[in-house]
Image (cartoon, rainbow, N blue to C red; front, side):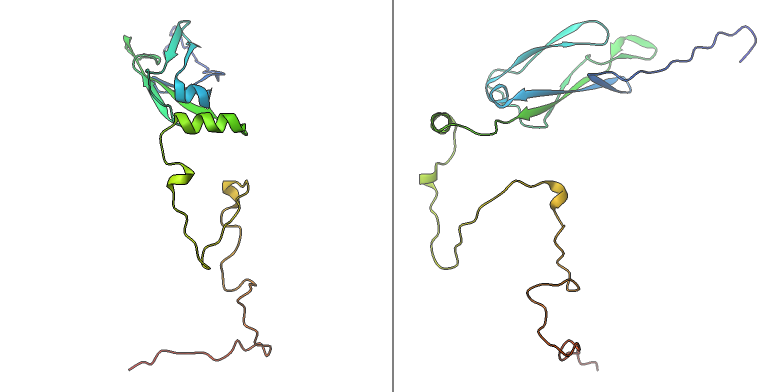
Length: 171
């Protein structure tokens, strides 16, 4: 720095809607399941003051956590003020907690796929009907499968020697 030079220090602030990755911008948008299946249109206020009208294509289904890109929707590129980065939108799809009987009937009639009647359920003594419950990813692996942990398959040998050991023959 020479005497007389003007030095600018830029402090980049966090934005409520956008994250900056170079000249690209990333935004998250939560939409309903209805909008994900039937289409949507919403305004998005850009940091440069423009309002972008974001809309899905007719007949397009937006899957949960899908990412869509808008060319030239990002920030200006350094030393190329007429070129802009991209805008990426990550879509979060909000599912309803439950459906009524008529809603289920209407969806089954409107959506493609097999019905319960189309699926042949196996029968026999090795077939078991099970129930599911809500859980989370952090629960996976919490039950130890290690032989060192207690389980229903532990040896009933009470002398603590662990029973007879078997060793492979070596030549």
